[in-house]
Image (tube, rainbow, N blue to C red):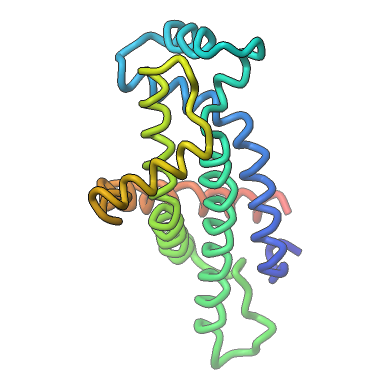
Length: 202
């Protein structure tokens, strides 16, 4: 039962698969969005530029530049996100009922504000973990604007190594405080609503 102590390992695996599956849909969207932000292009222009890059006849792969990095962000990020959320809810519920009948301890008994705290913590933890990969992903997308040969996942790994050699590990974390701070309120708004609706229809 998802609402009553489904194994946390199952939560992690299910959300990893979910994140990995959606990454095949979000990669093209993220690629086009990044080009629009950097170049101030229209949606149509960004798609046309991406389609025309490279020498491969399989133009669709142009929308999956450095896909391995993107997959890691979505799959591992989603897994940690949901695992942390469920873990914190269950820990809070157990502490809340420590002096009461243990059978009454359930994440379903938490209030909306309590779930918001768990969700915000999960969102911030997730982004703190995946942020270096997100930096590399953005840099790869940016590089693809200046080259006909599309960067690969291995190019992303080499780029990360180069950044660390030249400016240290802090180069992988520039801008992280803003992203982490943003992730908290976003998660606090989304996950409790999801829980509430699930409670209503179950």
